[in-house]
Amino acid sequence: MVAITEPDTAPDTIEATVNYHPGQQGLPSTEASGGRAQDCRRVLLRNGRLNPAGFALDSNGFRFVRHDSEVVNFFDGDEVRRVFYSEMEALVKAESGASRVVVFGHKVRSTDAALREVHKLYGVVRGVHNDFTESSGPKCLRAHLPQEAEELLRRRFAIVQAWRPMNHPVETLPLAMCDARSLSTKDLIVSKRRVGLSYSITYNPDHCWYWFPRMRCDEVLLFKVYDSLDDGRARWTPHAAFDDPTSPPGAQPRQSIQVSTFAFF
Image (cartoon, rainbow, N blue to C red; front, side, top):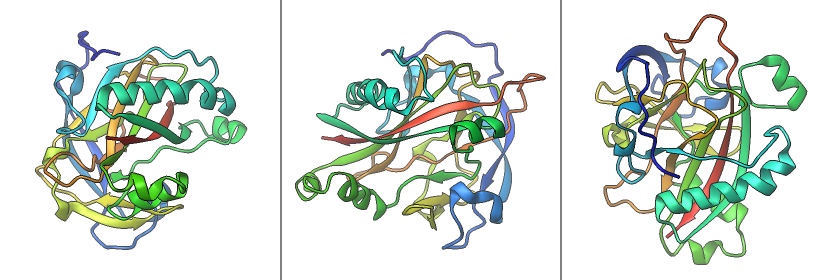
């Protein structure tokens, strides 16, 4: 579980379009973004592989790490819960400094419509968003750990996502990460999701974007989408899938898994 330092042949920067929220409160879910208006902006994305050890959860909001999994079949929910959950709890604990980490769910996504139908998968999310808000973070904790929630809410906790490719490297629609230090609270728009509330993000020219080209199945992006402590550290990490202009001809559809964790300090 060490930061990846190997070189990559991808360019240092690329320009690509990311889909921001147009700026009105209460518009539909980021996960149902096909039905809402979008503010499509061309942005500069920096190749995060050039300095992978330089990212930290409490400053940038994300970490890029190497991790080998014992999971054989990520389409097998039982195997994911039995094997991958404990792997991700250990990884998030090691990278965040938390004293305890609890996984509370996962989502498998693909851009292949036929595969989504067979395995009941999710599609990718193109709208720039952060999965939790000031109010929905604690609400999520109460929903998943009701007997412990009031005690746990007395001290700091965070929600950290672990995202990794499945079965083959990411060649299409990779994940773009916005450096939390470049985010303003003025950019946050409370939006309805299928379950609960999230923050959609409005365009800000100060946003600093990164991507990690051709992520492999032994690489994981950790990113923080809630922190109960408001002391200047990263609390929200905007992210979105985007059309990669460097995708090769005949690129394979993206397959990825995202695990959600509570990190307690």
